[in-house]
Image 1: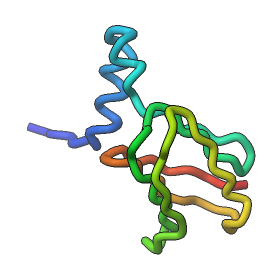
Image 2: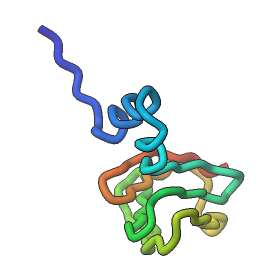
Image 3: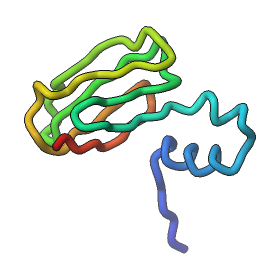
Image 4: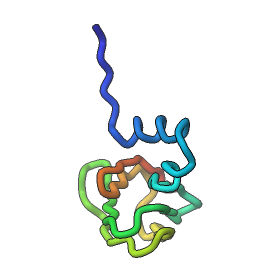
Length: 93
């Protein structure tokens, strides 16, 4: 028997896409626009950004439902974003 384990955030995204609108409103949404990181539905949580080597390069508490973070000061490349238990890989161009 093969068992594939996926991070809870990924499985939750798949379930929420097919569930009620009410659940979608509570899902953390992360998107990139150039070097600006856009976060929705994460008020009160802490955002942490790590390089692919594991070095923490940015941390801040999110104080509103919708927040933008300018990451132009970071070098081009891949980073890991963690907000509470939500984790996602991003790429800065």
